[in-house]
Image (cartoon, rainbow, N blue to C red; front, side):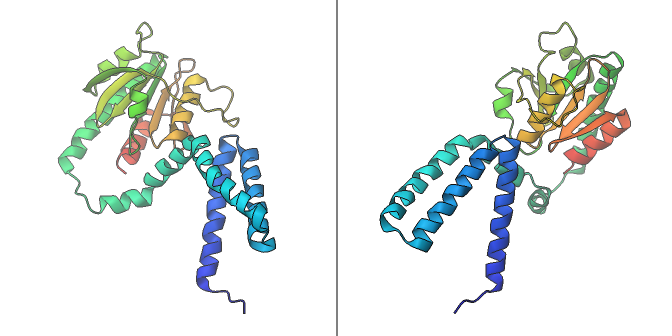
Length: 257
């Protein structure tokens, strides 16, 4: 006799969520046709093995599924890494982890000074229309990105930030990475987003900032060389035309999580 319990409803709901997020990741990475092909193959495999019960064909498909799982991990390792990064950086999970840790008030005051150094540097560069791209590490490690540039490992300082992005500086075209309250590296190369929804007037720095915010939970700040406007990208979303006060508020809000 067929019975339907609460756990069956939960099971269906969880599978639906898994398929939905898998579909989103495949669509963002322009692999939607691959996702549909995999889905069709799974349906055929279930039909042959479980419904029709064709033993020979079912056994062949079972072997292909085993090998295919490994192939999927290799083909979509970037998407899987992004999913795990997003999962580990989810606000609720971070809140649960912070419950078991203590926050030092003195450390927060020191961080506020460093936030102001970043804000003042961006404001100064915006007035002079000096292009800049600053990536602030949050929970996801950016060690791979740091290795693409020149290591600095210095205290966060307004003058140092401005000197790095000075037009004649050899490091001004790349991104600056800030990690553990220090300037770790400059001249770093970021993954560029190919999202078609990005406004055309935004340049390569904005696309690199968006790509980094999609690949990690980092906070990316952009100063436009053409307009002098300050923008930020976080969690795959842009915050455009930020004032110094807006930027300070954003940094205090996001870095305090």
